[in-house]
Image 1 (cartoon, one colour):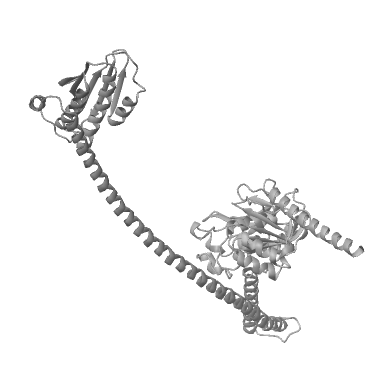
Image 2 (cartoon, helix red, strand yellow):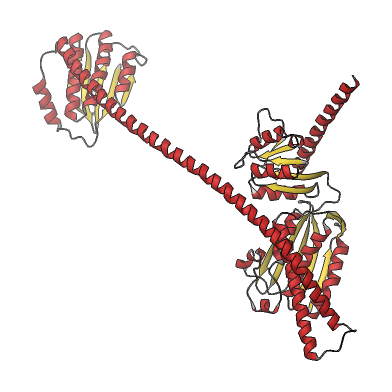
Amino acid sequence: MGEVLTRAEISRDQDVFAVRQLGRQIAELVGLESQDQIRVATALSEIGREALARGAGSAVVFALREDRLVITLDYLDGADVRESEGVKLAGRMVDEIALSAEDRRVTLVKRVPEHRRRRPLDGIRAELARLSSPPTAALDVLREQNRELAGTLEEVLRLNAELAETNQGVLALYNQLSTELEETNRGVVALYAELDEKSSQLRQAAEARQRFWANVSHELRLPLTSIIGLVRLLLGSGAEPLTEEQQHQITLVGTSAETLLALVGELLDLAKAESGRLDPHPSMVDVVALAEGLRMTLQPAGRADGVTLSVDVSDEIGEMFVDETMLTTILRNLLSNALKFTEYGEVRLTAVVDPAMAEVVFTVADTGVGIPAEHLERVFEEFFQVPGSLQLKTKGTGLGLPYARRLAEALGGTLELASRPGEGTTATLRVPHRMASPEVGRVLVADDDAGFRAVARRMLFGFAAGVDEAADGVEALHLMRERPPEVVLVDLLMPRLDGTALLHKMAEDDVLCGVPAVVVSVVSEQPGASHPALSKHGLRRDQLLEAIREAVREKAGRHAGSAEGDGGGAHD
């Protein structure tokens, strides 16, 4: 119970008013704030009213227990009042309420904030004795309640005014943010327009560079070929005798011309690769014969340098459907590099099948000088050469590996390097293993995700005769109008022109409306979609190929039905 402050009794209506006023006075003396004083008084009023309804003579005890004001009220009868309206309302006014049917008692508890100072117990009792007076008249209680209500209304009005002020501030902030957002959107639109213009300029510059390389290669190759031919005539068996110095100088001229001609050829090949004009022309290739041919061609250079060259091709491979020229060029570049930077030891070409990925894995491993880790990716940059003493002794342009990687990508594969300085380098080429002719013609992959485009190219190798790529809907539309594909893979979320808009424009075009489309996107669900749709997440090769077959069959079926309908009309 704690320290008892005072007691009271409820025997008539006026006592309810008196207990209410006493409760508010005690709440003020112990340190409760004004709003909490009203809450305590209201709770007592409700409980006292119900107690009086059950019989006169209910005792009310006010006590302090540590930091809590505890008020208990005893009912005369044993009725269960837990569900009464008065108890429910009182429970919302205080921190705790306890009901006991056995001892017919209701206990109300209100916490006193720690920062509120309260008077000593003796001082509180003395003040209560001073304030004690005859029972308060109902009109006086009503007047006091009206004052409390007026004070509460004033507080509510003040809070409403503060809330209105806050709302005005929020509205002003919203208007400011809307204006700033609108300005930002205008800036973004302008930036997109500028980017479009820059992209167009870059495209024009790339086309100009390609024309330049084509012209340069044509103009340089003819005189260089003539120089090499004349040098061979001068050094041939039927030529006039030359002094040793003359023979040396002419040999230097011929060597320089051959080096320059090789450089021009590599630059032209790289320009073709950058322009996307590397179109594989696959055929059935005997991989064992190809590897042996490379070994026979490059072995003499290896023996002269004290390096052995060996090849090991798995019997599982047999023949594979691939562009023989591209594959030969990649492997020749890798083997030439390995022999060039290996002074002693071995260069080994191996080829095995990776059944899980349906790929042939070619590895070229050497025991040469190796490549530092910081240069492993840079060697695929045009004209970059790893600095070192051995590099100074060897001739090269720094174009072989970049061109080899582009060829690997054109084949739907990958080319990676692993190396340790002083221990050697291993180049790994992975190429899709196909043993049959393609099922469909060209496929266009329209997706702003370069990583997915690379994955799709690998999945489609061998299945499609060729693969084109577009990074957004505008570029895809341009490519399709220039060279309509047999099938298009469309991502829905693309910049400039999204996939849905692209499909609408295709449907409105007299030529492109006949191109089957497969939606491959993170948003694969389209209400009422008329195209096969796949999710990128966990996409398997067999799922993609079957979706393409279905799209092609469906489009062919519609065309066949249309042709039959036209024929039937003619007969009628």
